Length: 210
Image 1 (cartoon, one colour):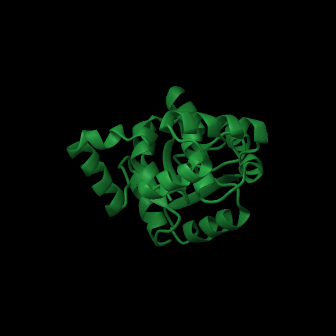
Image 2: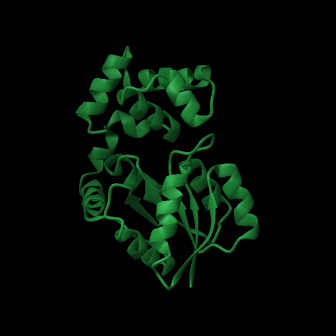
């Protein structure tokens, strides 16, 4: 039996995952969390083989959670299940220690397949993400784009600004102050050598970040 914990801020998503996994006789959803803090408490007391982890969480991001688990040498295998762009995050997540990446835009039937593969110690990537990984290996220079130098939170901020969200919107989503989000925005501008949000948006579109 593969024991799963899911961490996603949206109840409707957790419900969908619950219904899909219920159809698999060899998979058991042990618990659900809506935030990194709630997940931290659950992992202390609940059996977990595979963690289904959303990247966009209130407060600490999914990548922060992943980094904590890797640093602690946790035996839990992490399958990123996210609405963030696969093109920009799949390889980054694998390099950070994840065992797989499944986009929320993928066929829901792939969820059980991905959980089984990760639960058995294998890696799971979609065909598109596999091609991205192959391209990265074949062309190391592709990783020299300026946005690859951004921290995880800076990249998340860039994507949201380029998608039209205000600082207040982003602050509510991240559970941070608008002032803190503005610091991330200014760091992004500095690292990418861009002067305003319009330039950030143009950069994101040009580099397929949105």
